[in-house]
Image (cartoon, rainbow, N blue to C red; front, top):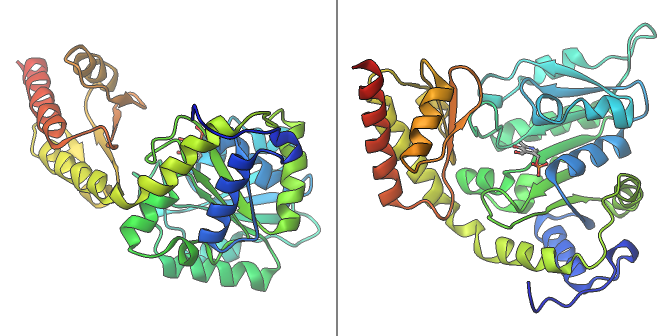
Length: 321
Ligand SMILES: Cc1ncc(COP(=O)(O)O)c(C=O)c1O
């Protein structure tokens, strides 16, 4: 980062940013890429480019673009979410087909979105075949298909496929560098040259035009070049963690949902559990009154997993004593 060659990215003149965008676009099989400050801006710019005001966006239930992006598809794009059921994050093609609206009495459908891996469902993986089927449906219906691939590389690792195969069904894909890939900041939005030209305009409108962004892109290049091949280690540790936690009294874990680097558990008091864990040096996220999320990444070792399990066991024993 310190030695990054920089320029003004608002004018697309930052060589390090351009190198990152081009490298990811080539690897993913797209014409162009655009560095974004966050996954949220990347998704919302994609929605803005793909839709017109008053259109619906079909999403899998629990999708980040709706649940955790503050209604911004309504604020920025004038778009409405239409959620379809998605057990373990995987929607049925028939449900998406049934949600496509054309009638004069309804908001017309403008876009279909998938999320892979699906965060709220547990970091679950949408199989390639389902992505292709939804891609086929989108083409038949003349609708664009966007992928929120904030953890796309985790899905690629789990599916044992290539990034290009993974991205093939989609018109646009958003890939975060700042999550399991461990860069401090940054997301790259991918699509056709024309799509990215429009995305560039929206990025600037939203205040996401960054000047010497090569400093950030340099870390993004390290993320892409050195972090993707090791994600399987995070997945294995999450599995060990999940199986160990599932054996403890007072904890419920849906092991079927533990497919990548996340473990969601149910406990009686999520906030209290998280506080006690943090006091003992293990940071977990309380996401609801009963729901806790643990995420593994490159700094979490086998020893940390063992320590987490011991700490959880001690805390739970203290609560029930
Ligand atoms: C699936 C998914 N999409 C998008 C985002 C948004 O990313 P950011 O926090 O960089 O805005 C997240 C963040 O956790 C996410 O989990």
